[in-house]
Image 1 (tube, one colour):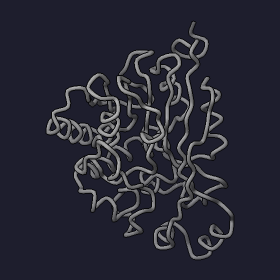
Image 2 (cartoon, one colour):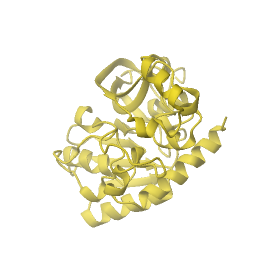
Image 3 (cartoon, one colour):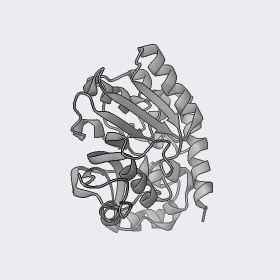
Image 4 (cartoon, one colour):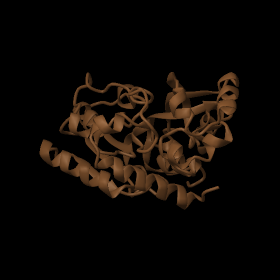
Length: 278
């Protein structure tokens, strides 16, 4: 089993490669990860092109939802995007918060940060910035942002609890998040759990939905809601890379489901930085 640091390195290397690819190249492989075999182009991603602020150059086809559509953003908000990639969700958020708002993207992959900064510079956006950093140790002060969004990223973080603690810390009291992510109902076969390529491709890092929501509540968030839930069907030609024929049949008969969910939760208005800190 890989350590947390080894898993982070896998993700950094894989998404560093992805940053240099086009959206078309990324869509022709599982969640943008190369060497996974050609699969259905819509396994994970949803179409952003109808949203205000959409920038095709920032869309690498990597997400599994549309969190900005559910994030209850308003003009003047300060928004943080966890795992901001090339800036897709940041630019959509910026179209809502306007000139008086601010959008901050954080990503641990240098190539993604560089690509996002280039996109922002071309667009002339002075109130969108991108910072290199890890979600488990965010490069922001406490009580800094009104809204946090994230798209198919937290499942890649080894410590989900620490990621949500950091999300809680940087949100202002009364702030909220809307996060799209991949979760499970039932247990994935061991072959998928151990596959590093699948981990970087957004599936094997996923956890049970009940456990995922439980972490959010334990951190101290309130009014936790699943805003959207969508079944993700992985095709046999992809699963066959990791499972034998017998294992594949057993998996399909097991009732296990892989879902994209968009989750909303609020930091209590009386909270400071994190539970027990006051």
